[in-house]
Length: 140
Image (cartoon, rainbow, N blue to C red; front, side, top):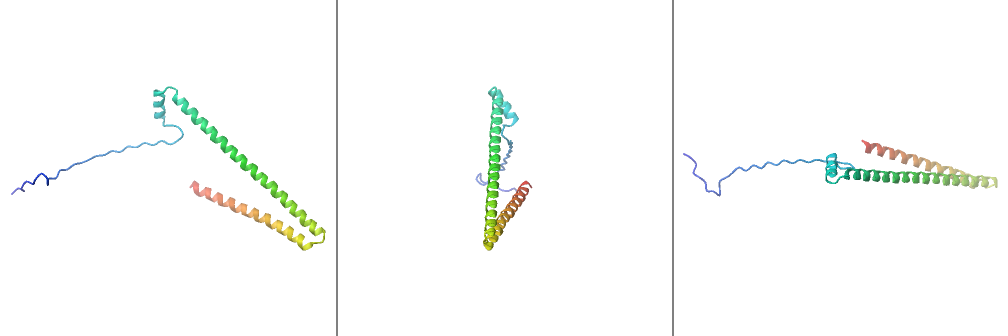
């Protein structure tokens, strides 16, 4: 015997929805080549202006990087000169103390001077090693 008809509120209908998603991505300082071509069709000469803008920005960024590197180099060199001056001054002070008969103070000055600059050297090497390891980790 067939199933009795169900009221309209109870009837089920199969509704299928199909959705298609498409995405494109472009990364860089310039638009995608197709977009650049489209811009040039809409506004003649636009592609050249966009290229000139990207080149100008690149040159500006490179000049800032160069100035930063040169400034850091000057600062490091200045620090080395100051450190050498202080080391020489402390060494001469220790030698003077030894020459004037103040042996304990002279030796303490010389050993303290040597220890200070040795610890600065070791700390710098440890810092360089950590930076190198960090850069190697980031490049993986």
